[in-house]
Length: 193
Figure 1 (cartoon, rainbow, N blue to C red):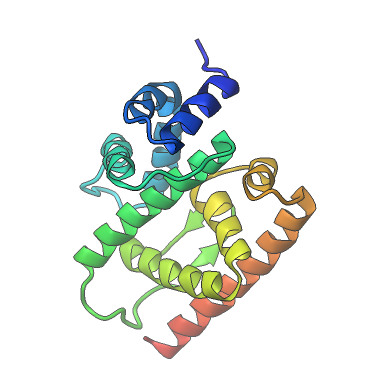
Figure 2 (cartoon, rainbow, N blue to C red):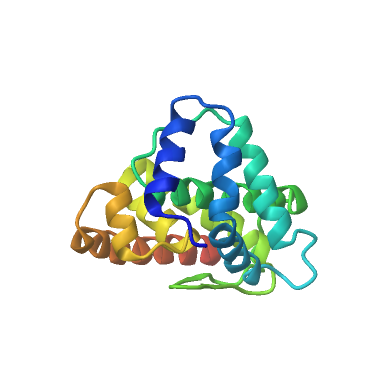
């Protein structure tokens, strides 16, 4: 039986208000969607990655439990947070595996609806994360649009709902951010840093 959006939203509100068991009750209701999100992330990782989609979901759950609750107005906001947590887990993993300075052997990273990366996927993810942090410092909303669309797999409409903006604004921000990130990543690759 599919959970109702209302049921999930009510549990999210309870979790936001500090009810300790609310997150435990949410997870079974949204597990399939979170697992699909994790599979999208893992599909972009190198073959033989030590982290699996199920482990990524479970690690995200642990981090959510340990974090301070946020205030949620919708499921889309919750999934955006989950996408952010999963991205952070993978970037942390990549940083720990690639503690050396990013080198010039990194293939240019194309930002599109799916992550298309070269041989050194972990380094590419770190480079993308660094560029996304820079974009977010310059324009927080555009950074959130990228995070929700690219990392979270949210639709234009879901992203618009989560950010309380129009779908047209999401598309403008998405187009600008993809172009900006592509330019930044190509600059970094060209400079060999």
